[in-house]
Length: 370
Image (cartoon, rainbow, N blue to C red; front, side, top):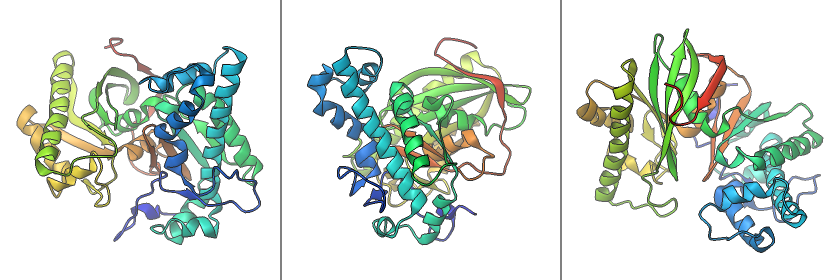
């Protein structure tokens, strides 16, 4: 089945954050799930609120900037009280994930009615999804190891025994891995960026024998986004934001080119906003989506601006969910979901040229490798 989320003339956003779980008739859905959106249950904000509610039992400071990382450590052997409390939170997270995916797989009428922008074909598309790969920072540690098996079991016991739910290898870096697979034949090295809401991830992809051999990760940089929820729509502020984004890319390019003479002249960039033909979708006016106010085509805008800074370079521009999905390119009836500030979603293309991933592929930490 062709992906209806990409069909013209009016493709709709496939966002998991806006899926509403009204009820799942026949299943004992907890009351705290009913009526909630995916974002309300599975975003980093939702998880932080849940942890903060039990911060005293977990012996954590709810205002700690590293609360999520410290919570993850609570899932490993510690005092019985801390571990029991942490596992209850992780198990509830897994149940939330299961009920979200069951909402999509079942397509009950009351849940369809709660998502007015989706038509029946969008729900039918989800009903033929047989495998979901999960990535992103939230699930890269002990939370993922605890929540995902529980979610898988609940889905399989609720009428979908063959449904596959897996943590993706290198899940924290899926957009980088996916974009690395788009390199042109003969590429030796390529610079990659994943612009998120809270951090900018960077890497240099290395290729051997026409396969993706490794990613050398560069240190993360703070995101140029000043806020996730309250982003200025003032044109001067947006222009300044665009300059900051371009400065980050140019600085990384100079850093990488100094030690990689074979660096490709294509720069791959993913943004945490939905794109259509190289332009943010009109309904996405968040941190990156607001760049549409500067130009009718963001892809060309970024390309032209970087050429002024760097010379003859090309830009490959992706939505971060679509970039993550490229990590599973060639897989049919599959979705890829990433978990971080919010959820990202993408569907792997079944056809096209994509660099194979070498069996020995690895993501190397900063200052290791080439």
